[in-house]
Amino acid sequence: MIIDVHTHLFGKGWIPREFFYGVARFITHDFAKHGIQESNQTVGDSIMETSDDPGGEMLLAEMDEAGIDKSVIFPVDFGLPLGDPEVPIDEVNKKFAEVAKKHPDRFCAFAGIDPRRKGAPDLFTRCIEEWDMKGLKLHPCAGFYPNQQEVYALLEKANEWKIPVLIHSGAMMVPLRSKYSQPVYFDDLGADFPDLTVIAAHCGGTLGYPQMMSIMSVKLNIMADISAWQVTADKSYAFFCKALRDLMDFVEPERILFGSDSPSFRSIMANKDWVQMLKDLPKKAADGTSFTDEEITGLLGGNAQKLLNL
Ligand SMILES: [Zn+2]
Image 1 (cartoon, rainbow, N blue to C red):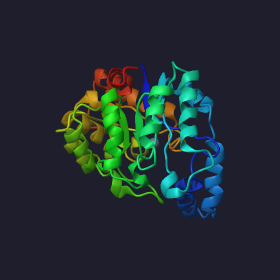
Image 2 (tube, helix red, strand yellow):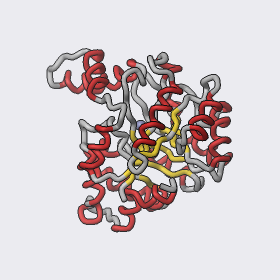
Image 3 (tube, rainbow, N blue to C red):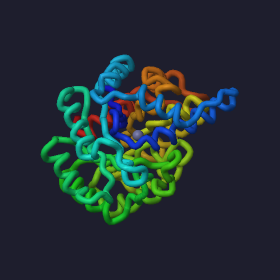
Image 4 (tube, rainbow, N blue to C red):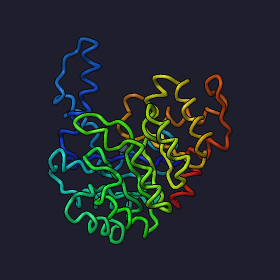
């Protein structure tokens, strides 16, 4: 069983345009190196157009191609820092719940809410109790720290319902801010909610993973997903193998989960290649590292299946 614990669906008017223009900066920066001049707006509009997948059909096809059985899908709420998009956040959450309801064997939906929104705890309650969503996704880079009061109001509910909370960690592109998602803030979540399953998305980022690893070694309720690590693996396979080996040795292999952050990195590495790279680790790990079949089976889905009761 292969489970991707970190994917997004984008629909028209679900996400502020500014977010896509920030993503576009990376691409135009790269284009410029090759002498191609394109504006962030043109590239951002094109990303928005090509990633439009409100019903999840494109993601399903990608999962089929990669052999991924099930994906956790969730919205991101960037409305407070970037301006609310056309579709209100409660409607966006409801759409994710509907997609999961339509494909219950393939998708599991988490709610995505900025905890500083007026009525955030009520919306969260509706997502879980009325719409049957299974967890919560938070993106602190929108401008809040994971350990601040408004967040705790939601974490207390998640703790009571015994559902997982996935929180972005590590660096984030403009116009969002990386200071909010540093691994150190996850330490408080371990201290204050020792029984809550917290998933540190991206495990602090491939370059920030040592700090997250240090916190995870003492805060045992914190898990991590390796979404976005395919970007690092693409740049340096040896670095990636060493980082993953460190995580398994100094945390526990059972607390590391597969993720893709699809559709974000499709153009860098297709999910079928990302899955294949992980499957091949027991035979083709970089020099000085090794992985067992059991570790990789757990990473790809066994661990998530147990943790998320999928
Ligand atoms: Zn993501």
